[in-house]
Image 1 (cartoon, rainbow, N blue to C red):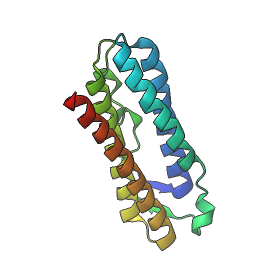
Image 2: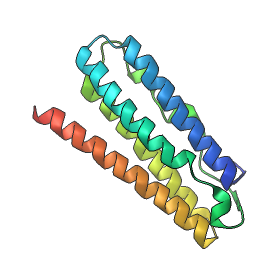
Image 3: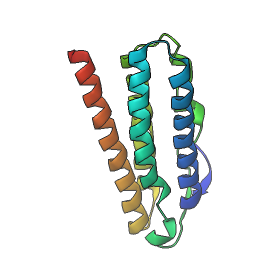
Length: 150
């Protein structure tokens, strides 16, 4: 656990994570051997880039006074994107499950932050961010189901 963060810092950290995921997609598109895996990465990347705009447009100041919270959840990027699990020969389902795991961790992070916040407006913001990540995870689960069905 980290010691203290304010909401602006937390959003900057999350945007940094999301940018790292974009970088992961860019590297994977070039490195993967299978055309199917490359197609999946391109699809996931496009959805990710479209969804990033939502987070980047958030202005904390619109949700009341910025709040400092103690004992924020771990903010270490190495725990989020397990790049060591994706290899050049990775199959589409492996890549999708890796990304689903990432999205679920971010959703849990937002929920944890929401639990720590006192201000109603800020709490609602982070609860909505958790719900937003939850919807992304559902979309990815549907993609997994469609691939496993084929």
